[in-house]
Length: 138
Image (tube, rainbow, N blue to C red; front, side):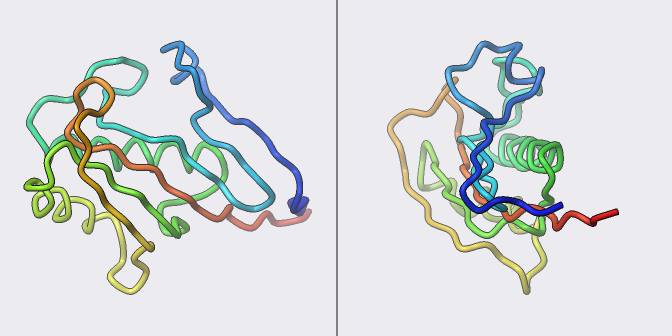
């Protein structure tokens, strides 16, 4: 099976539809997967994990991993991430956790910015782009 370069699919899951959010968790365009912003919420709930920036970053990355795997990709196929921080002073602890999810030789392109407010008063939000895992034809 191959992906049509101009096909578009709006993707969601019971995990996100149960929260009645006004967006798709991801959109597939051809062989690219575009994730909506992801925060460190407990899956299926509008509640952040406790423990500060490191705990939120870990949960954010775990949420990203779960979403991209659900829709046919994997963490090592992420090619770009945008990181939004509530406080740019938390860059180092966020970065420490973020880097633990990637091979040093396959780091995604990345940009970062500080925001005056994130959903649910999160400390970190990330939006990523990944390529889809090639499908094997049978």
